[in-house]
Image 1: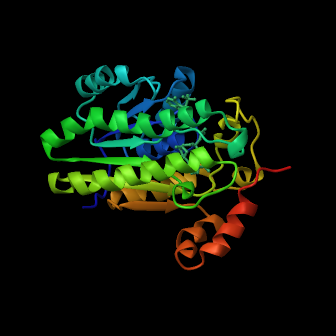
Image 2 (image 1 turned 90 degrees about the vertical axis):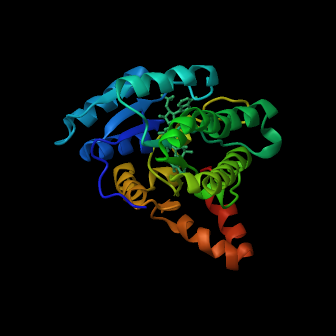
Length: 273
Ligand SMILES: NC(=O)c1ccc[n+]([C@@H]2O[C@H](COP(=O)([O-])OP(=O)(O)OC[C@H]3O[C@@H](n4cnc5c(N)ncnc54)[C@H](OP(=O)(O)O)[C@@H]3O)[C@@H](O)[C@H]2O)c1
């Protein structure tokens, strides 16, 4: 079921301190949604809150709620705070995430675990904390930011691709469970978007990669991406592909020409020398 507007809807965005999450916050503020902004850095969330308030329509309620997505114990209290101060969650966007830049054999097992803690278990845990309220009201919408890397393998990202594939499977299965209860599930599938993702990506030893690679630098503008995503969410789309580069063609090409996509991915996915 689609919706025309998010006015007065309670929209909770994780990873809202930067990149796609920040741009989504601004776009939802334009639509007069009641917003909950989560990530670890409170100062960056306050900056995003101000950006939201600066939009023409952004005079609505905005709750800054710092949350480390790996801190599962903090989630019940966070859900309680949202529900009591703003209202029950209409749309949860599980968007927090971290990428990887390292070859398989150079990657500590602890780095694989960290990628899964943030990119998979964090999303599952928050979803499980929010879902009971939606089931009780027989209404709600849960979204997750996966990736083209959740459909197509790319080098230097074995852990990230595995995590994004996992998320794709989890939320597909969840959709099949909750559809009959009136709850929508959308999977966002971005290609390269111009954000902090490669700078914040972790290397094989868990250090920050610290550089913006050219794929990301040449990627889609996050505000443009947010407009596509919000439109897709309003329509209740199950999958929302968003991006402007060749990588987007890989989504359908892989079905018919897997060898071609393998050669392209091996080349495109390589970090700059
Ligand atoms: N940019 C792309 O090309 C691209 C492509 C496909 C998919 N994606 C996905 O899009 C999502 C958003 O990424 P982005 O591109 O916008 O990158 P970004 O600018 O680096 O933003 C990542 C966000 O995740 C938050 N985050 C990271 N670790 C966290 C933790 N432990 N707890 C809570 N929040 C955490 C960060 O906030 P704090 O540091 O303040 O916690 C930040 O707000 C991610 O899931 C990413 O995998 C991005």
